[in-house]
Structure formats: structure tokens, C-alpha cells
Image 1: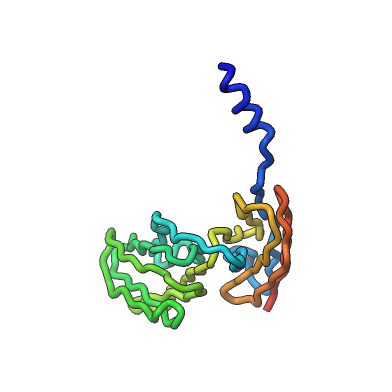
Image 2: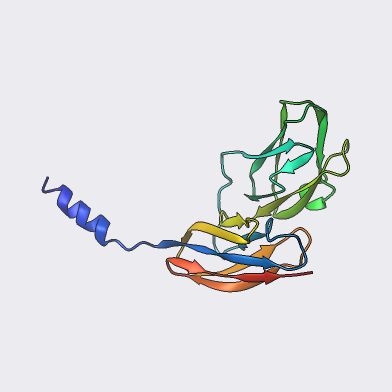
Amino acid sequence: MKRLIPLFVLLVAAPIFAGDIHGKVIAHGVRNSADAVVYIDSIAGKTFAAPAAHAKMNQKNMEFVPHVLAVQTGTTVDFLNSDALLHNVFSPDACADHFNLGTWPQGQSKSYTFKKQCFAALLCKVHPEMEGYVAVIPTPYHAVTSADGSYEIKDVPDGSYTVKVWHPTLKGAQKSVTVKGATAADFTISK
């Protein structure tokens, strides 16, 4: 018991060196403020291992779900077809190596690993009206806004960063943000 007390005091007295970045992105010129990607850009001298877990994107009701998916560089994304018809996934963007996964039926999925920082459009050759996006970010610190524009990037180490906003149809924004615990950062974007 006596050994546990010093350890407990150390844990309680140790400062917390991580916080979060939260706030709102107000998007002018679109229906709502959803689908903006807020992220910490590259950090000098830091590299991040690719996550082992795969991200998921569904094709359901003739839509890519989610419409915008943010992942870290090196992430493998599994594309599931949940519709009772054939779907395809391809990207016309060079940063995504112009990949084309072919066509597959309901209940099956195919995967692609995004190796470079990129904002890749996703399309379906079978259904040209379908469109989605994968935002490939160089750090694990990113979030996609909800319809009201709110976002939260968790577990951000204290420090100063360049925080950027990307949106599929609006001009981006950026600002320097110093994180010390819970930190607010709001943005406004427009056409």
C-alpha cells in the first residue's frame, strides 16, 4: 500500500499535456456547414505511423456514406456496397493514383490504401450522380464538421499548430492555433 501512494501522487500531480481543438466552421453559400474537414497540417520533425485499423465508407441508398471521410495518410479504406445493385468506386485524382476498384455486388467490399496527402473525389462509373470525398491528412488530428458546423479534434498535444479547413465546394481557411488544454478555434468559409 505504501508503494501505491507515491505512484498515485505522481499520477495526480503530473500535468496533462494534451487537450483538444473545438469550435465551429460557418459555411456560407451551401445548405449547411457539414462536410468541412478541420485538421492540423504537417508538424515539422514529426511523422505518424499509418493506423492499423481500416476506415469504412459505405455505398448506401445511392450515396457515399459518409459523404466526406477524413483519414490519416497510409490509411486503408474499405468500401462496402449495401445497395441491391452493382456499384463501382474510382477516383479521377492523380494524388489518389487514379484508382479504380471495379464493380461489385451488395454485401461485398473492396479496399484501397491512400498513401499520399490528398483530397480525393470518389465516383461510381455505374451511377455518375454518386460523389463522395476522402480527405487524406498528414497527421492523426482531424475532424469533419456536423451540419451546424461544430467539430472537435481530441488528444492534441499542447503546442502551436497550423490548423486548416478544407471543404468540397468552398474555399479553405487556415490559422495558427496554440493548444493548451481545451482550445477553441472558429472559422468562416465561403465561395
